[in-house]
Image: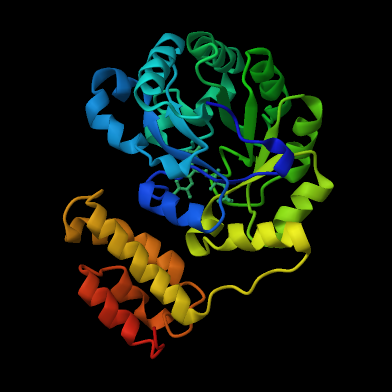
Length: 325
Ligand SMILES: Cc1cc2nc3c(=O)[nH]c(=O)nc-3n(C[C@H](O)[C@H](O)[C@H](O)COP(=O)(O)O)c2cc1C
């Protein structure tokens, strides 16, 4: 178990609850993503009902190098949950969530609320590092602060490095920004310069040029791509080729994009990850809408895509684009 090779400027698929399930991870790996992080799992949930929570963090060997992400607010519980997960799953690294803005997580003092109590964040990280020892490296994902008046990324970075964390992912927004506004890459850059462990930059990476800009103009050791990958998983492949040769390979044609949507849906149904077909289609709707953005002729079909209930119906709807897929 080890961290990825940062000398190659790895491209991470960002952890996204409800999105980066094992099927999507497989597809992103095929499209060139170097490192993956699972959807997050609650440390309390792990301690209370590990078998029920295990499905959030299951992964295939081909997804490696992969980190499993946990959230929580009690150092001893986080350490015990990290131990259970590491012994059962043997991830390449264990990632602590200190960025999630959703009330369900923040209300229990987890996720981004840890940015309001940096000594607690440091104690959590130190407890997990101590528990896992040499068994598994520990990383943390933070935002730059709670709000614009309380930017604390540099202090958090120093404390986490002191706690023995081996890499840090920084989403360049505050908790208050949620997903709005622009990610602040100046703060990400100054954090990366202030510590010696690798920093992975995150936020608004949407094109191969964005990836290159991050590599050329900041001190980050890799980037993490979230929402843009939902719309265009081939971004990883395009960005890698661009970094390598300066040439951006063409994006898939509309017909290829539709074929990709159908394949993803088929894989999701066949895997049974979400349950029966209707339940799977419900889980897929947001995904299909994300893929459809930019495919000509899909705009009037969006209301139907948002209610699609079977694979057969999806094929019919996409057939109405007039695209030969
Ligand atoms: C639907 C969704 C779910 C997310 N779930 C998680 C999560 O479980 N853990 C986490 O650390 N970040 C989570 N994030 C945040 C992303 O990892 C990432 O930091 C954020 O989307 C910014 O990157 P982007 O601009 O490339 O999308 C989530 C984001 C979205 C949109």
